[in-house]
Every structure is written in structure tokens, then in C-alpha cells.
Amino acid sequence: MNEQKQDRRSRRTQKLLKDSLIELMQEKEFKNITVKDITERADLNRGTFYLHYSDTYHLLQDIEDEVLTSFQEMINSYSHSFHGNSLLPILNPIIHYIGENAALCHILFENNASVDFLDRFHHLIHQNGLEIIRAMFPGADTPVTNCFFEFITYGLIGMLKQWVDSGQQLPRKKLAELADKAIMGTAERLLSAS
Image (cartoon, rainbow, N blue to C red; front, side, top):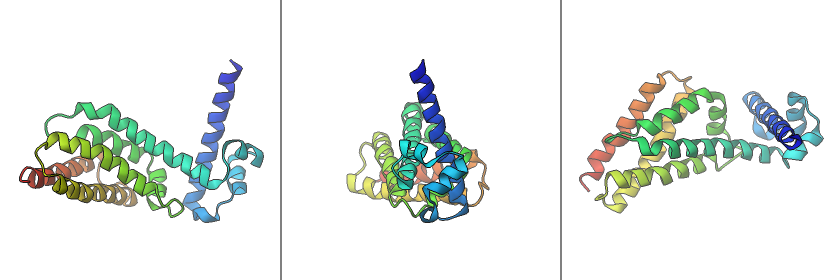
């Protein structure tokens, strides 16, 4: 019982620290944020911070890992549910998550402190999507598929980034449909013929 209470308290403290960092990153550049800034915002002492994280970069890395893990879990949960030639069962929950966490995603897409978040996000999309596309187009030429997927992956990231940056002007469902048409329409034209 005491261990559960400790785990819950630890998770709550980590969430406070993460939320504080996210708030501060909306106000100033990451490189200018100190542990003191974060703990003051969270109303915690510095010792508590160091029980969980070695520095601000470690905290940011934990936030990024959490987001990427959530994306991977969504892909794992929904990848079995596609129908025909549509990626909507996977795109819809991811776009919903990004919409619900727009401030966080905006920060991660823009963040210059972590040079690898977008690379890791690209890798996640590439790794999962390539498997799906190969299953849909088993006869497609491998070099063509690889080129197609690089194009689509960066395009999808750009589309999501633009959507967040513009204040989500398109409804989520419309964005998912647009992304699905861009991916599947291009795949049909390029990979069916290869």
C-alpha cells in the first residue's frame, strides 16, 4: 500500500515538473530555463527535481519519450483495424492526440534544444508506415517504396506541424482525410505502377 502511494506521488511530482517545463517553454527558449525556474513554477524544491531528473535536458527527454511512446501505442492499437486502402484508423487517433496536446506538440515540433525529436518521430512513422505500405503494395519496387516513404514521412510531419502552428484551422477529421488522401493517392500512383 505504501509503495503504491509512493508511486502515485512520484508520478504526480513528475507530471508537475513536466507541466512546468512545458509552460515555461511557451514563455522562453529552453536554453534559458533553469531547474530553479521549473521547481519554482511547480512549487517544489530543487532536491525533489533531482530525485527524478539529472537536469532540464533529462526532463525534456522524458517528455519526448512519453509522446513517442503514446504514438507507438496508438499505432499498435489501431494498425489491425484498417479497411481497404485507408490509414484513417491510425491517423485519426494520432491527430486527436496532437490536437488535445497542441501546446506540447507545438513546442516539440519547434524545439531547438532536442535535435532528435523530429528525427525520432520521423523514424517512428517510417518504421511503422513502411511495414503497412509494403503489406498494401507487396509487388512495389523497394527503391521506389523507400523514396516514396521519405517523401510522405516528411510531408506528413510538415502537415501536422503546419496544422498545429496555424491553430488547428482545419477540423481534425478533415486533416486526417487530407493526410490519408495524400498518402494513399500518391501510393496508388507510384507504387501500383512500380
